[in-house]
Image 1 (cartoon, rainbow, N blue to C red):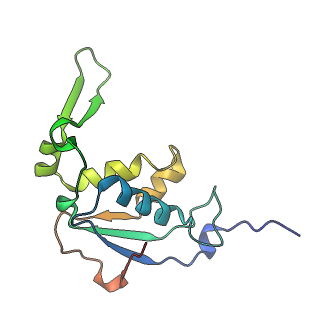
Image 2 (image 1 turned 120 degrees about the vertical axis):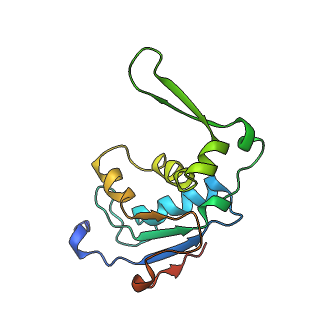
Length: 142
């Protein structure tokens, strides 16, 4: 018996809609990561893009547990002396709330060109409106 290996062009892609209003960020991000990778499909192949598209709305209303709203920071480093920048979650939430979800999901993706390709299928919006109505996204379950 031969092992089945899915090819990217043969995969049927669906569109999923996730409402982030009141959902815990990390738990929601794991569901999104599984949908993007295609882990729930029978034809899942680890080295191929077998996942679906995911549209996340109301990203500004995502919930963080504990004291993360006051204490959690995102850190980046430019590579230059004194180039370490820390940004609190509260500032990210008020300026670019969609980046909270994007960053959480990106941390769960493979760190290679497959992971970057998978992240292009994630569409995050701060409010309830999105321009993907023509794709008829289905409300994600689980």
